[in-house]
Image (tube, each protein chain N blue to C red):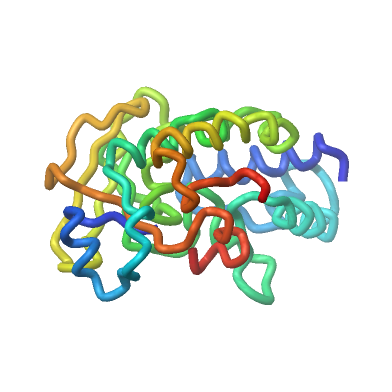
Length: 77
Length: 154
């Protein structure tokens, strides 16, 4: 789960696995992934007891950003 | 454990990380809530057993990582309004730091794993105000459904 200077740097990286291109996101899309209540609301005093309520919005955001990629699909099989 | 205890313990640990850049020991959890040290340890263990991206250092009761923070240094150095004393769990969680410091400029500084050259992202309240270089990308090889099987690796 790392940041790189460009997409080309991702693909040149020694740890890159061909066939996992779906795991590459732009910085803006990565920021969108981390901007639903699941991550925004961590300082809520009742975060643990309410975190499950934030799952649907997070799942939806992942699907939007990835254009329904299975790589980012958290829905049950 | 009652849900209230989980919420309280979680909030205390996260707030402590925000304030001082280091996670509390379980004895500090105990002191905070006026309970015996062993009860503090139990509350920590029960919280860390929840399905959240947090974990203990193996075979200890020491917090290793508590998203979005890492309690051990990583390459993702976090500065808030120019002060650097935090580390992010990973590149993705480094972006979520902004929500814990409302109204403040959060700067992520890290080396590119491919070339070692610097990456710098400045975020205020979830808005990326500056990114150098301008074409930064994120990458994870594991599909998201497999992350929880081995969070430190993911």
